[in-house]
Length: 104
Image (cartoon, rainbow, N blue to C red):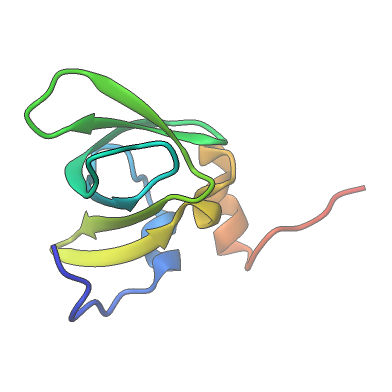
């Protein structure tokens, strides 16, 4: 996968569901043998669960310090794990409203 020619913004990727999307892990804390490819199987507030290509095993990766490229609609979009640190169910709502809002 290459970062050349990407036209969509990271926010456009984050507005939709990312589970099931192909992903290329470029950098992740504590993982050896990178880079490698896989598919996002699940996500939580602080982690992504990725199934590495050619394996049935699921790997839980912390979002902090993570650098990935997500393939969506035929385009590769670079994403930092810190941009994904929001509850998956709240991501669409927060990004559609223009960012995080503080409630009292």
